[in-house]
Length: 235
Image 1 (cartoon, helix red, strand yellow):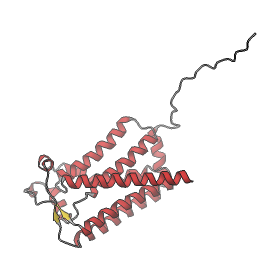
Image 2: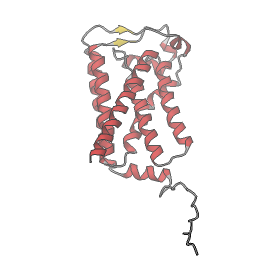
Image 3: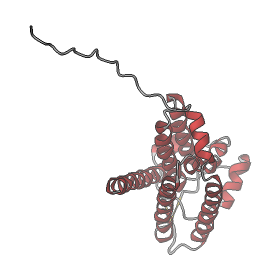
Image 4: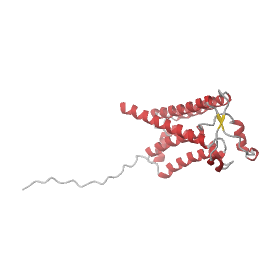
């Protein structure tokens, strides 16, 4: 009589469900080190603006006027775009708020600081401005105020776009890690795209500035992620 071992019945592969819903997981992350995150984000943004305006008023040379592309003529001026433009400062605060621990918070702050430093050095050494658009700013009160407050040589690369893209990358990773639904990840990407569009619609930047800011954010995000993978692999 031949003995034949029993063949186990295959168990269907069922994806593991998160221990808590994705929105609850994000709430828990916000509560982690919330004081450090709040103070750090506030000091970081305040310090950035202090240096930004100093650089704006103390360039090393005369600013170069950025050239226009067909896209710059196609995108119309919009007073409503000011809301999207201003939303950046809330949007970028979400990335550090959703970090899980000190290591992630430090990595996020480190890469954001590096990106800002590169942009500010470029502004200082190679100042650029957008062209004098034929726009009656009196018809756009919010944009008129923006133009009067931020009219220096800090056009290329657009740090407004760089921070939006950087935050979008960070938030995409965080939303994916808590298994957030597709609509939440889509909203994240659309928000970043909306901020990039607003820089054109407010005439704060031209398309080349947007592309430069996007490239800066992508390179810094990639380099930061690669560095962290090497550190974690060696630990």
